[in-house]
Image 1 (tube, rainbow, N blue to C red):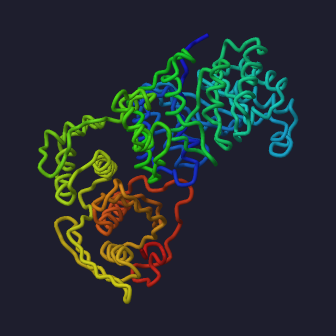
Image 2 (image 1 turned 90 degrees about the horizontal axis):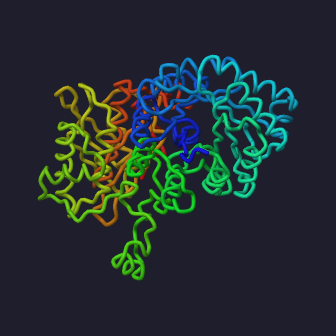
Length: 533
């Protein structure tokens, strides 16, 4: 049996379907390129039939990456399969991933069909897809609750029809590791043509067992693991890619299995996902949380200083977290700054970007005593994620007045194309007033859909990271800004989103984009309740 586990990343399909994780085409392509750098074997780029935006993003990813297989999901329907093929056919290694529910529960209540009808539909879908594409995956949706005899019949039939990969998902996260192991072993031992296909696991985390179930399936003979970065995905999410891979790496003595993922890219990939989506990684998240390699207990600290293996079963460097004694501050030079960028995995940035980052670093370093790696990462992600145009709006200065006995006022000056303009506005808080002033300056109405402030580091001089999501009549746009001043950060993040709006940066984030904005920049209810903080 092949001892290499293929890593199938579905962050851009199943992961992106979760509330709060929508991405536009530009962001999906950027994420796909990082997944390629991570070394995943298959990227599930989307569900092509779902929307024109999904189709376009799958097609764009198919043309943007070279090494990974690019897959599109499709129902077991001709129109879905045609859409999937049209979207992925430009990839160097395309795959059609089609699926049909096989549990009696789904057949009776969702599909309204018998087992024989479902079997015929599955075979027809795989045969049709195989006539288009040489690489076809078939998933038995809700496999963990499917009758075992019927499961074996379906698996054998779809392999005969041309399926090269057969996925046995725990779609609702109901199974236990023992049940998953038995299910996969049953298929491996009873299906006569199973040697002609790879068995895959796709487990959800509704009961917190997604990674354990995935590993159990691998132990039983599955050789493809379907995962998401940080375990994102529908409901409670999917098996976390970094946890599955680091289990295989850390316990090689138990599993004796190989993989193609470059684990040193894991931290950078997770940080990019967080930056793009605006959703923070939990501090205690396994492998990639900021506390994963932190030790506060005196006993633990003493042990780690004596020998890191006492309390660290994997090294920070193995997942791309760099330990360094080089302290950066306002007196640091560009060479040291550039070296730190390289240490953090950003050694490939062009000189112009590095120059901009260093200038921003020096400004912030004047405000802070010490710049930590997290501060630098926040700067990098804010800069590299920015969409730039010749006529971008830029912040020149601002003045705010705020009191608990009166409305806050803000006077903001922006520049565009070398021309400066100033406007003032009021609101129930200084941030509210500042964003109102920005809207008056750009003379284009928008609604603030989401606003988040997060301290990047601890202590009073912490760098603040502000993420916003705005909508206009064309779509939804994200913006990001970092500063030690949350009002400045709020203005910068709003301008980032506004510039995306004016630059037409692949506007719509999924199907939930606003179809219209009802207020104007003179409306007293502008952003009401969103930023009065």
